[in-house]
Image 1: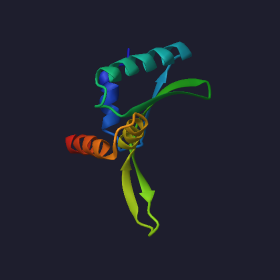
Image 2: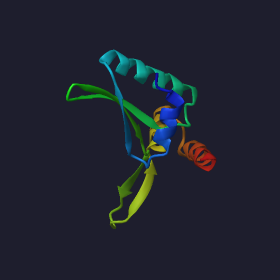
Image 3: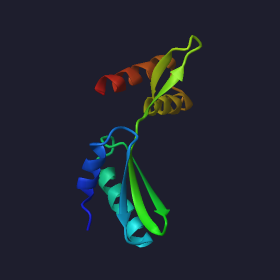
Image 4: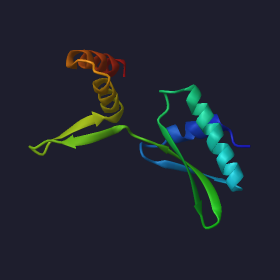
Length: 116
């Protein structure tokens, strides 16, 4: 049986947006491994940024773990790029939908950014 903490550790030794493909014997094993990894990651919510997917190629089944980057870049009119954290952008939209003022949103986001 595959050791989930070791798999997660391997993925975190990769560069951002690289993937680890883990071959399993059947579709049932594929689903079981995906759920074991998901449960492990759920315990450490906020610490791990992984995408888990299932793939089948040439009759073989794989669970693919990708170390993802939540950073992207917004291109300004002058051509320069500004880094954007997608999690903070999503949080901002949620707070705007909840009716928080701009000052409250900026205070909360400044606190979240300082903790990183």
